[in-house]
Structure formats: C-alpha cells, structure tokens
Length: 319
Length: 319
Image 1 (tube, rainbow over the protein chains, first blue to last red):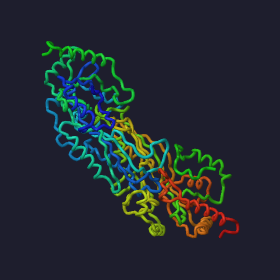
Image 2: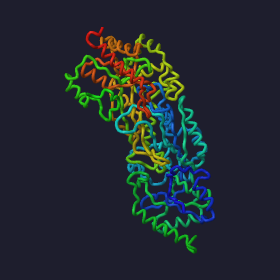
Image 3: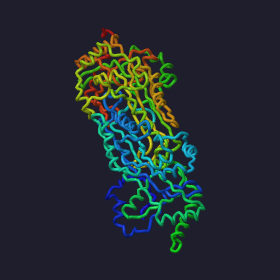
Image 4: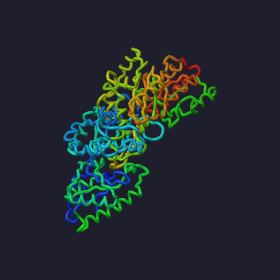
C-alpha cells in the first residue's frame, strides 16, 4: 500500500506522468479498487470537535537558481561592476507581492472563483479564535491578502511563499564575496480554477523578464498538482458523518484545508476513488517544525472514530 | 607582528575601539614605530607592470536576521495568513538598488565627492581591456551604477552587495515550510566622504521602516571602517617608485583599489605610519574563490621589487 500520509515531502520525485506513484497506480488499478478511501492526514476543528476537510489547495513547488559570474568573486575587487546573483534573486523575489499582499505573477488569479455564498457564509460563521490562533505562533496581527478573513486566506486563496533561500557565505563571521549563483525554493498554494502548468510558466517568465544581462535562471520542479474539492453528498460521506457523531457525540464540522495531499488527487484521478478526509491534527501541533506533537485525546478520538465509521459502514448499518 | 595580509576575514572580531587589534597597537605603539609600512596585499596593473594603490574603499559589513513566527510553520496550514521572514527579507533587500544601480539607503551618497579632474582623467586614460576583464569572470556586459566607467565603479564609487543569504529549507527536494527567521550578510564598500556609522544607522532604518507588524530585525557588525587615501608626494613613495622601476624596467601605475585592508587604516590611525601599498596580484587570480592562483612571474617581480626598494631606501641611495 502506498503511504497516504507521505504528504508533501517529494524528495525530488516530480508528480508528472510516468513518475513512480502514477506508474504504480496505473499498473495496480484493479487491485486498488475500493468503495472509497479515508485519508487521515488532516486536522480536527478542535481537540473535542471532529472535522471533515472538503477542500485542499494544490501546490506548485519549484527551485530557482540564478547564475551570474563564472565563479565566486571578491566583492572589493569586483563589487559595483558585476551582477551579484543574490542581489538579482532578492530583487526578483522582492517584487512577487504587491502592497495588498496579492501575487504578481502574470495571470495568477485567472480563473480563481469567489466562494459560493453558502460556503463563504459557513466559513465566516465558524467560531475561530483568531487572536488565539495567531498567538499560538507568536503573532498578534493579521497578515496576507487584504479584504479576506484569516480562514479565507488559508482555505480559499492562492499564495506564494519562499520556503528556502541560500547563496554566498553563510558561516560565522564575514567573507566579502560575490557568489556565482544563488537559489531559492518557491511554493504556490493553488485553488479551484488555477492551472499549475500555466502558473509555472508565469513564474518562469516573471524571473526571466527581470534578469539583468549576463545572468541566467534555471528551475527544478518538485510538485505540480491542482486543488481538490470533495463532494459532501455521497452515501460514504453520510456514513462517515454518522460515525464521527457516534464516537465524539459532536457533529463533524465541514472545513477547508490550506495544505496539499498529493495522494488524494492521484487516487481520485487514477483509481476513480471517492476520497474522504478526516484527520485529528490541531493547528498548534507544530507540523513540519521542531517539537511537533500529536495530542493523546486526538489519538483516542481517532481510534474511536475509525471504529465507529467501520461500524456505520457494516452491512445493515448504513442509511 | 600582526598579519598585515589578513585582509577582510574578520571572523567575528569587530574593529571597534577596545577590540584586540586596536588594543595591541596602542600597547605596542612605541615598539612598532617605523619610517613607513609597505603592504603587499594589493594588485599589479598587469603581469609585467607594477602598480601603487593610492585608494582603498572602506567597508561596512553587517549580518541581518529577520524574525517572524515563533517557530517554523507548515506553509499549507499557515501560508497566506502569517508573515514569511524570507518573503520579508527578500522584499527589503530587493529595494536596496534603484533602476540606475544606485543604493537607496538614506543619505548613502551624502558627502561623496566627485574625483578631482586630474585623477579622473588619469583613470579614464588607463589602458583597461574591459571586455577581457569581464570575460575573465564569464561576463559580457557592463553592470552597476549608470554613467560610470568600470574602473570608476570599482575604485571610486560606493556599493552594496549581499554576500550571503540563508533561511528555511535548503536541502535536496522540497519541504513546505514558512521559517521562523531568515538572515543575510550585507556589505557596503565606502569611499571618501562616507561615514560608516551614519550608513550603518541608515541601513538599520531601511530595514526597520519596511518591516511588517510582528516581524523584528537584529543586526551584527563584522566590519566598519572608512576609506583610505594614500599621499603620493612623500620621500618614501619616491624611493618605492624608483625601486619598482629598477626591478621591472617599467613605471609603476598609480591605481585605485576596490577592496579594503583594515590594517592599513589601523596602522595609520594608531601608529601614525605612512602606508604604501604595492602588491603583485592580478584581477584573474580568483581571490576568495575556488582555484585561487598567484602567478610565478608576479612572485619573481615581487621578490625583485622588494629587494630594489630596500636598495633605494639604503642610506646614500635615496633622493
């Protein structure tokens, strides 16, 4: 079985046609048939309240390397007369966002739909403790695209973040160097209506149009897949909702998710499976950070919920 | 004896009052008295032609760290709603230069004098092979401040280069992370009229004025010293010029230098010494880069020149 919780760490395997996961799925499509697939790589609403994730953002993840001089140079002997790839790279990255926190890649928002009124009202009605959410990561102020609530920004709007950057001398003390190259890792979270391939082309043009003479840029792609929307009106979804209620005595909240789970798209595309996303993580689990945690109460809720969902799925128990 | 060729690798020792070099010089000022000091940490004009460096740019070298969230965050669960320190840092660094290649720190050019007409004419008259100079580092085009020649940019104009940058995930493959902080090393080459302390304050304000809420910036200083101008009308300089002619059968060219040699300023300030700079490096020595070299012909020219200069300094030989 593929590891459905592998999440986003691709380690150099681009999810393009012919890459290992796709090849495996196609070869074993008949062995992997099922009524639906339950994925648990998502969050609960809070420690007591289960949640069903009905949207996931897609992901475009690129590495860009800007190259200038043929080798590292002494910044005294050459500084002021040659292009410094770190200056060039930061000069380009610094232009990605406008003053309203919107992404400036050409056509980035083409096709992005506003949320249906019903879903928008539901998200705005969720009892989010915004100050507490921000305080859990050391912040006091809202950030990001203007005119959007915090949950809208995370669940429904596309983004661009620099996930890593490196170049030149990074050790202790000082070295006066103009490096031959500088690199960054750049990720865009994508929402319904956005085409990962078109946005990748726009990112490349954004860099190329801003390069000074004698500089070049090269790209590597680590992820490229669109968003996911999960239908909520299937019989399997009804069984899952009933099971969650059985186990926790609470209705599962329908939520969005800002992250991306490649396997959800692959299973749906290549196996035709209904995917249902019910996980028990919390916002303050410090996922992808030092001291990551998972609450014991969430573990128990997960165990009980999975048993209850299986019970609701048993012949004679459904409906 | 202090290592006069240590150059610019400060390794965490800021050259501020009370730091080791200054303390040593003050304690041993009487032991270190001399007629003048000959420093060989500079370049020749070319492999056959010696040069006397009469200007060195000063250096301000800072490390800046921008901090945002209290810990690294998953870019899916938080992206779009929190400040990303790499986005913030690159957004600030990307604003340092204007479209004409000039540095935008407040007051950066205050006090910078245009070259005296005579010196400017001499520099413009030097037979520089600009295409060859650029080709030696893999470039074809001129870069930097508009309206200045290549030698003017390197010898007579102030600069700002990012010498290093790092933050977030920098390993192989991908990780979708918003890091808690991002850092860079930033150096400014300084020319006559610029005050390193005033420019350090301007750099700090430049960052602070552009920080979004919840972000902070901290600085470390590794170098801060002004430019150097060497008088060319001293009796010692006459002896040096005569010795160079004896050894190489060519007149030494009076040149500028884009680099910085802290010991030159310290010896002059604390010991009151005349400093004369005659070195035999070449532009294509790949200084501070892999495969650095020093030509055997330059080594022989250096040996012969030092002997000849000593000869010209011997009693009865001067004048």
